[in-house]
Length: 357
Ligand code: GN1
Ligand code: MG
Image (tube, rainbow, N blue to C red; front, side):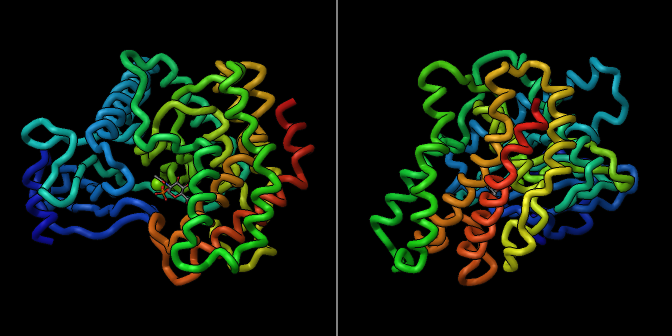
């Protein structure tokens, strides 16, 4: 409480601090909401940035500032109303910085957007809206002026790098968990060659990098109370990557009939209706795609689900050092649920390819 109040005073905020409460379900940063006393002053959201993961906070905050300013300009050009609800607004410190370091933690503020909801599962309608929104997001950022954005986490969605991390974890076997997950390791190794395709295409000059969100979990989208799409949130990982990342992570989360960490694998399957609706919406606004990129979109779903399986398993083997966990075997349960989803995607891959055609 005292800390929140102190931070509130350090940033360019309006109104009087009233209360603070935790918010959201992110696996990385800690998020809180500050309510102000005055009805005509905004409320604020602030976060302690996970500095172990985002090691270059300055680069990340600069990326976010450039991206949100550019998106705001695009909204203005299109004559949109309610712009403060359709793009995030970072708040600077009174000194003009995009974050504050207190000697231990890094903090940042943004405007809180009221009367909104995030959702963990989508209908066909909201999937279509999400597809259009992420296509528009990438399209709007395709002419971002200036230097390329920095990679806030180097090699973030590079599957070859993620596999290398897995192999290092297996090698170390820091907490003696490898024996228990031999079956999963074998399944992952069986698919390595196939799933490293995009990195090979990139090296051959056949696939390019564009600005992506790189964390298009369905709950990283904000809707109003009626279910209308407002904006994309959690911009920490906006950086250059393959367009496969964003459609892929949406399929992984939005088109999963179960939960990311479902303990009942029978719940976990790919929802083809959601994939179809998202693909349709996305292709309507992502008008910049090359034929090669279009062809690979369904592969994105496979790749990101595979990558998340690899990442959760790596963290499990390392002894749960990266993701927040709620119980002892949480990362293993997540791994099994992601692997089940991967199998379901593989089974229905032919149908997913049809949607692009
Ligand atoms: C993390 O913080 P959150 O929940 O939005 C992770 C994503 C993973 C996701 C899995 C920086 O996202 O890459 O896909 O968990 N973010 C980072 O749920 O590693
Ligand atoms: Mg997030």
